[in-house]
Image (cartoon, rainbow, N blue to C red; front, side, top):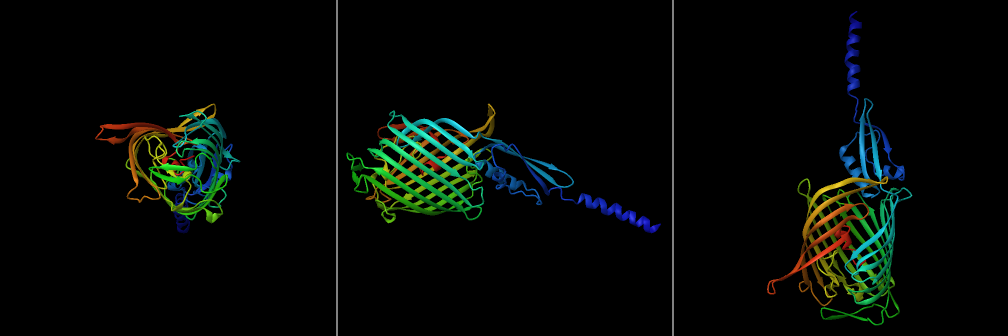
Amino acid sequence: MKNNLLLIIIFIIIIPAGLFSADTGQVTDIRHKGLSQTSRFTVDYFLMNSIGSPYSEELWQEEKNALMDLDIFADVELQKNKSAEGTILTYSYRELPPFIVFPAMKRTDQDGLLMGPGITFINLFGTGIHQEFLCRVTVVPEVLRARELLSYTRIPDVYGLMFDTEVTINYFRSYNALKLFDENSFYSQAEFKYRLKKYYRIIGSLTSLNTKHDRDSKIFSADGEAMNMYAGTGEWDYIPGAGIGFAVDTRERIMNPHKGIYNEVKFTQYGDKLGGDGDYSEYTYDFRGYIPIGLHHIIHLNMLGRYRPGTIPAYELYHAGGVNSLRTFEPDPDICGQHELLATAEYRYELFANRQITVFDMNGYYGLQFVCGVDNALEWLPDESFENGRYYNSLYAGVHLLVPVLERVRLEFGINSPDMDEKSVKFGINIGWYEKAYTQRRRAR
């Protein structure tokens, strides 16, 4: 009798203990809802919570940021169902439309406002490949002054190759109002980012620029200095380029980051050493920082420095002035340099972000930020030193509308060039797309 009683006590203690000690946080199944256009392996590649491991809320936040940065979803949500066996994770997706036909607009410092038909395939083959085809012409300040054909391809790494790739092909005809010549050019670029570890990237790029000579504009003059417009002696200049760099990227998101830094150094060789015209190199430093100072408050700092020793054609000079370099300034041929330093300090108040919208079964999102800040630019020509370069700055404020594909639409206004002697100041207004820290690298086109 005593033995039977002892066995009963043991069962009472051990069996419930075994039940309650089961790890209900362990993931036992992963499910997906809402994937009608996107391949399952595309999203699986970015998942860090896995079957057989404990669920992590921190990993879920990283998963969501990575999936949203694909720019193929309006939203991604996660539902956790716990049971005695463990946790079932159900990822729910609101996909953006597979393609968008839209009036393609672009504002550049060089050519003004361009518009025309465009089509964007947001999620080719269900793998997050982004493909754009655009045809645009100038509408402001002079109708049809510039004409552009553009193909842009972004290929995210969903195959485990550790490479993110961007390919741009651009044909342009224009009267170039900054370089003051009739431009007929063909440009192509391929950029590759190889992920060493979580935060580190090796960057490689290949570029090619072909520019037809304008016989009536062989010399360009700026700030009293005359330069050869072209590098070669034939009918066309051919300038190839090859670059290698290294970056540290700790941003929690690429689109609309709230914290972290992007820090890049890069060397690029152009021209004669690669079998082309001209002979110059470029040393690039690109810093972008994001500091949260409250639930809705963000400080954004960025600096872009580019030093280019060697002999360059004048059409490759940098120009500052406009929505993608020096806001509230009007583009000016004299505000130019072979070398440049751009810097911005900006305060952002995020009123809201990622509000969902559905129209005719098409999903989207939007957000709104109020911003103010100061832009700075230093440009210097070959015969000038850094200390003798020309410095400009402007104060601005405005609103940023956060949307898919374009990332942000920027409306900004402000003042520049205060003159105490003349008791005058200049006012300006700009409309732009994308993060300025991104577009200032590619602002000419």
